[in-house]
Length: 274
Length: 251
Image (tube, rainbow over all chains, first blue to last red; front, side):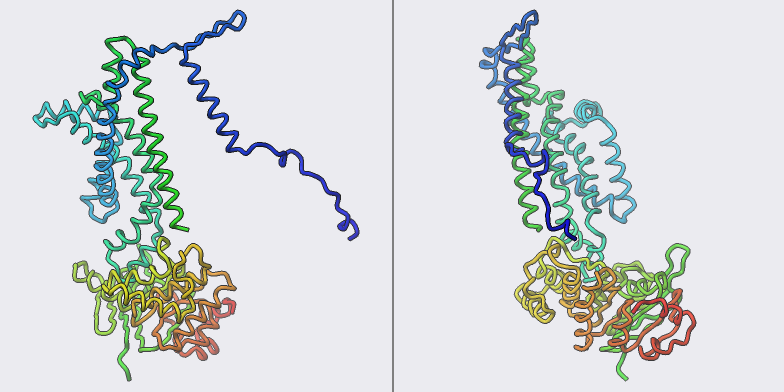
């Protein structure tokens, strides 16, 4: 009894030491790593005693001369990605619904589609559609073939994401909807899909980001997008590093922009839920 | 004698090799409150789900207000009949099953808008009136995740009522609730009974059955073993299995 009235005050060790917030320290370190990368490409030389450190010197003249040529591919890259995103989403939704339906022909067809396009390399699929189909008389231009392949391939991956999202919405809600007299179509459209879409948005966003970069494979079938132009510029002048870095910088920038908007969308969705 | 408002005739239901319902007959009068009691696996929930065809019976027929729906058919007409049946027979689930992406009000007006094709203003007015009567009006713009279990279940009851059904089915409505929350739901159900709602309630709440039910039915292994007014069935059970069952149920 008496011991409880007198309690000595002690500060907790180590946990409560005042320091800069994690966010601030994070940003400082991020700046530091970026600075290191810049230094790496700056061309500076350092000698520490017997050790010679040489950073990579880029041919900035080349970059100055060619960056516009390379950058003209960005619009094609964006166009490829935009078209393929639409195509893939439509395919993904349709095949997910088919896979979950009670129709045996539809469900089996969807499963086969998903298996085939997830089971073969995207690179190979590009060649099959562009060169292989031409051999049997079905000819597409490079851009169309690339959009077709990207849609089919990413549609297959995204289909599984859609399916998982749909199944994640509790069966009980679908039952309640049915018990109220709503048709299966109404249940899917009004109850299941809206919630499923909220669940899968982060995953789908990541797929889109990956797709933006896989558009570079279109360069293998004569599409002059970003990666293709970078190789065209770098090859005759033997400045691969410089040319490809320009392209890489663009891909990175596109990804950053997309991620920014994705995050904002996610935050807005979360707000309207709770 | 009034015509029964709902009849289920010769209901058989098998799940794989197990026969859960073995030829059950039930006739419900208007304004009657029937409580179904029994052990888990006895078929009571299955019977409820067969009545509104959430589970399709293997044999038998359900009739509500002149609409007769036989079991086992596969036609488009059959599916249409089931949708019509479900407009007349509402259901309240053990897990509430509210639409989590909609507010309370939106939950209530969804089916009237989609199924009965009501004007939005009318649907909203009816919904708000219901919420007032159940004491939930101040929650109308709230999302289900912010409500307690008891409140969610009461919203679920309101949602079912919004379709103005002739019969309400309750599938263990308080079994998923913490004890202190069951009271508010049972109170709502008592209110509905007093107002003349025709109800079939699957429940373990014997107090509710004793106070509110017009008839209590004990079901075991897919068959109605005994049925009668609550005072008789609960107070002077005849069947041995029923006696054992009642001894084990905590009141």
